[in-house]
Length: 296
Image (cartoon, rainbow, N blue to C red):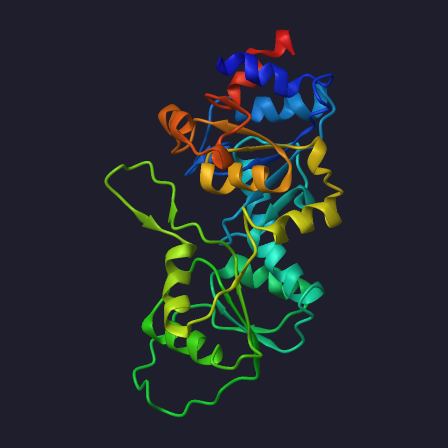
């Protein structure tokens, strides 16, 4: 199962009409503050030389698409506009307004990126930032909260878990999560960086409720891509570095899939993956596309 041969097949416009389009950001485009070698050139190759439509899709809710666009520009990626960057925070705000028809205030466990997207779509919210009240038994005024949304929050605290789970005692209060990613990728193998899924777990246990999950591999983010960007799953190649989110998303919803080994997934992981998590194609990184340019 040759890496190079599989990538060539994925990019050949005569091969099953595969249409490279969706790229996960972390592990594919950059790690931390450093761009992955060849990523900018590969995206430019796809968009300008081969006429492919490209969008970046991330479960990370900590930044808005504009924040990500600014980061792309800083790292030398100049081929995208804000609408071509889709984060779970964008989709969560869209879903709350247009699918769940939320009208009242939303309680947020999350960061500024999620707040910006809620503001943009006109949804009032409370909860972003530190919360360290001490008297947990006081009868604090309960806001008219119609939904609780949970993403990654560096200020997660007992107070926030208490408030979220208390609001969720009301069966009419909606429960939404940006994603279930347990950890962020780390360049330090000794460090575990808990992600939104770790924060979410505490609220799920305390409230006894299960959320609607927005991000990959779940359907809401696919629905958004289809409705807002005209994505056709049968003509889309999902490229990512994580089996449980990126590849599972593609497999579950009928997209072709390509795993890159520039993130935290190894070739051994690919070989041992269950059928539902086995990618159609794999490559060392997006740089492989440039190296194979003469064969595409």
